[in-house]
Length: 417
Ligand SMILES: [Ca+2]
Ligand SMILES: [Ca+2]
Ligand SMILES: [Ca+2]
Ligand SMILES: [Zn+2]
Image (cartoon, rainbow, N blue to C red):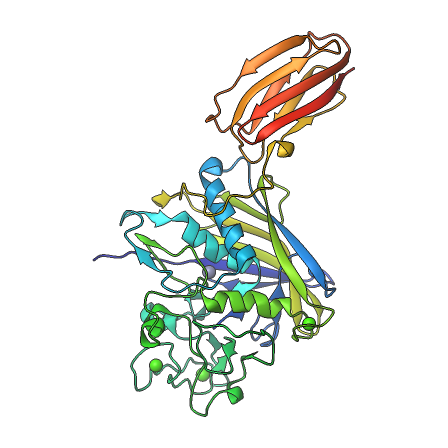
């Protein structure tokens, strides 16, 4: 079977607090964006909004309203948000046959890019290593003092497994200390259970990578970390593996890297629909990427810890993108109350904004005496983002706008000046 290989890439820029920009190019177990020779091997990267104080860190995720495929992306963005909120570890998450062999699954690539947007780097060497072909599947590391990657798949012949012989390469991939298995997860996740220091492994072994060949070796076939770079047409990978979840939860242990202390946080992603002010903003823009990219800026928040300060995810239109039409999880918070009417008070027009593309059914406008002044039926499948309502003919006064939708009714008073 012919499979096309696409590079998932990330280009990151770290902005230090003194406003010097150091561009870092990532051509784009678990590792962190920004960790490396330039910023520090032990850097742990946190999502937007974490400043070292524990509690809930809420990150908004939205779609650029002007983007190509803005409507098509909605379901997958909600599904990816649900995956990172749920942090459920799965096996057998690599599937063929769900989509056509010539299609590229938007949701799978988005899940990967969103991992970058939350601080996770590739767990494999990937394109930023400069390595080619299968060598990119070696566990993420720096090339060490000899300035060259030492690549030897060891006795098992499987690239990325524990018996790899990596010379002086410095491991960047956090592993589970107990068994170096990236496909199972520890109970507590912090520096007592995960490490990137090879001294915490049996002598002569290297940090195992969450690659699909390694998963076969470890008897959980068709399983791969979402953060493994490399995407095939016809393939879907819409759920997280243990390694991805551990990466998010290790960061949640905070700057002291110890779970259960005051600096721990709980990451909550909040899907905000078509909204270009979102913390993580998703867009199709061929001038930004040849395939897909997550671009981040970051700032040190203490002790080798960096928090992302801005993020964009871009996709290129030049592929047969498949958009999953099925919501994996219905969000009960998305209802008619998310529809807004503005400005208010107003002179001549009111804009109705529907950022979640809720199916609208009708708009009725009543005057102060309860008479219907205007009534409009709407095709609920029209996916309307904005509707401009002209009220220039109305007399000054107070009007009641009643919007009926598939997700309930919005009743709002609007003042015409
Ligand atoms: Ca080396
Ligand atoms: Ca090996
Ligand atoms: Ca902590
Ligand atoms: Zn990537």
